[in-house]
Length: 122
Length: 107
Image (cartoon, rainbow over all chains, first blue to last red):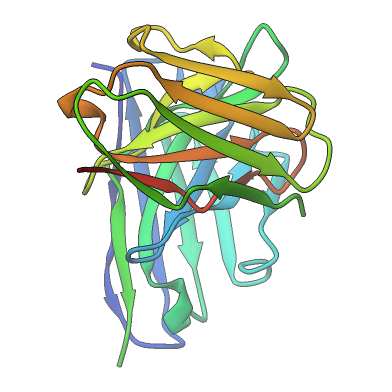
């Protein structure tokens, strides 16, 4: 089955750290860029970060730059999001998403994980 | 960053109704506009890519149009499973940005 499964969410105190994992199956993981998108409770979707197929190109949203680190292990078919110095406004469901390039030249998120809830609170 | 503005933020409709949601980009994005559906507690699901192309498996009652800065998602005849929140998203430039969402509720 083609799927993404996140893990690692939980409750963490402000200033703390957490690492999310996203395990891929059913497709050739190394063929796709991977992204993280988050959604605060009752709010909309916000793009967080992306990583290239070989892990050499990485981009972050300004809101997480310097605090979050995205990485991947193609041998384990897994993408990670290391989150440090967490703040209350980082509280959200974090989705990993597979990016695919269409014939039109546009990038789409055509496969999403179920999400991992991260709660930052004392 | 390119801001995506959807309208309305929410709407009430009945089964069989025609529903139209608009999305405006703060800058030119050609047709690099995607639409996603999100049901409560679930991950988003791609409906339309490149402004007007239906993703494989998506019912034909969904359609999209537009280019440049102004886009529309139309549901021709609302079905029970369509009550959800819809998001537009631009993939023209980083950071990818989403609209704030349009919640389609039962009238």
